[in-house]
Image 1 (cartoon, rainbow, N blue to C red):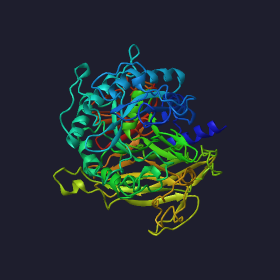
Image 2 (cartoon, rainbow, N blue to C red):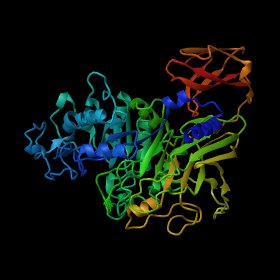
Image 3 (tube, rainbow, N blue to C red):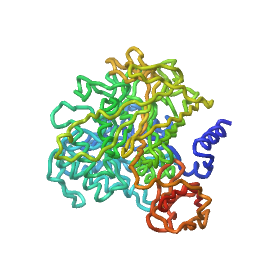
Image 4 (cartoon, rainbow, N blue to C red):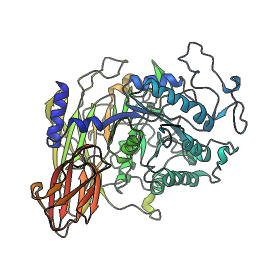
Length: 610
C-alpha cells in the first residue's frame, strides 16, 4: 500500500507520467565514498567495513583511504578479529615492492595487489551492491580528497585498478617511492602547481570516469599551505570541471568529541562545524554560494570518513548517520554513479531525517538549468519524512520529525577571472533565504514567515512556490531542512541558521541535531528578442513514438532546437537545426520533448523502448 502511495505521489508530482519501468531502471541510490580499514589508518578489517556499509542500507560505496605507505594487511588485521595481533607486511613473507620503507608497503602496491582483490571478493559477497575501489589523496599543497577512478575496475575479463594505481604513484603527496613501476614517471612539481597538474591529467585521460572531492575541506585552513581556499577550488574546477565538481563540506567524524574532528586541535575554517556542516556550506552567502554564484557546477556531499566505532566515541559506520542520495540512470552501474555525482542531482541527509526528495523548477531537477520564457519559476518540492526509526542506538530519539525546509536563492554572474581581486573572495551578498515551509507558522528575524506545507500523509510533504526572476537574470535555488525549529537555544539562531556546534559532542547530540542539504537548480530569464508561444504537443508529430533509435519531428516548417528531458527534469539530449534526434543511448522510459520553432514552443511526451 505504501508503495502504491509512493507511485501515486510521484505521478502527481511529475504529471502522471512516471512508469514502473522507468523507476526500476533509474532513481536515487544511497552511497558513501570515504571510509577506512587497516590497510591504512582504520581500526577494522576490510571485510567488516564492507559488512557495515551493507548493514546500514547503502546501495554503493567506495573504499577510499590514504595514499602513501602503510604497515598492515587490511584483510586479516583489525580489532574485530578475535586474534588482535596486527599482521604486518614485514612478517608475512609477502614481497614488498619499490623503495625500501621500514617494512611499509607503498599504497600503489597494496591497492593493485591486495585491496582491489578484496573488493572483487566482496562484490561476490554482496552481489546486489556496487563496490568501488577509490583512495583518499594527499593533495599536494593542501589536505585530503576522496578520489574515484573507475576505469578498468569493472572489465568483464580482467578487472584491474591500474589507472588508479598509476595516479597515486605519480601525484600523491605522500608517495615517495621512485622505483618507476610499469615505467610510470612521478611528477616533479610541488604544492598547488602539482595539484593542478594532477587534476589536468585526470581531465585529459579520464574525464567521465574519475572524481576528486576535497574531504573535510575546512580542516587545517590556518595551518600554512595545507589548507583549502576558494581560489584553490576555482583553479582546480577551471582545470578539471568534469572531475573536480564538489566537496565534502558536510564532513565525516560526526560522532567525534569535536564534530567533524574540527576545532582547536585541528585549526579549521570557521573553527567548528555548524549543525554538522562546515562553515563553507553552512553559511548562507558563504564559500559554497560564492562558487554557485558563478554558475559553477560544484556540488555538496557528505560522507562517513569512518576509521573506528565505539559506544562512546570514534565515528559512525558508513550509512549509519549520513547518506548521499544520487540520481542514476542505471542502478548498480559504476559509470552511472560517476555520471550521477557529476550531474549534481543529489542531496545529503543526516540521521535519515528524510529518505526521498524530488526538487524541480519546471522541467529541471537538481544540477540542471530551467529556462523560463516569462520570468516565472515554479519551485516544486516533494519530500518524505520516514515514519520509522533511524539507526540511533544511542538514545530514545529514534524517529526525528522534519520541522521545516528553507528555500535559498542566489544570483548567478559569470566566472571570476584569476586576475580579478574577487577571485580570492569567498562570500557573496546576493544569496539569501527567500521562503520557508514547515509544520508550524513562525516569523523569523528577517521577516520570513513559515508557510505550512501540504501534508500528503505517510510522511510525504508537498511544497509549491512561485518565484519571479528579474529580466536578464540567472539564479540558483537550493534547499536545507532540519528537525530544529528556528531560534532553538544552542542549535539555531533567529534567522534559522545552524549555530556553531558545542565541544564535547556525542552520538546522542549528533542524532538530536539533523540537517539535509540539496544541490541547486538553476533558472535563467535571459530577455528574449521574441518570447516563444507555448503550443500543444498535438500540433506536431513524432515518428516513431515509441522510438528505439531515432525520432523525427514533423508538422512545423523549421526547427531551431530540440531538447529531450527525463522525468527527473534532466536534459539528456539536445540538437539544433534538424528534425531528427538520436535516442539510441537513452534508457527505456517516458520523456518530455521540447521543440522550438521560431516563436513557437511545442512540448510533447514521448516514449523510448528497447
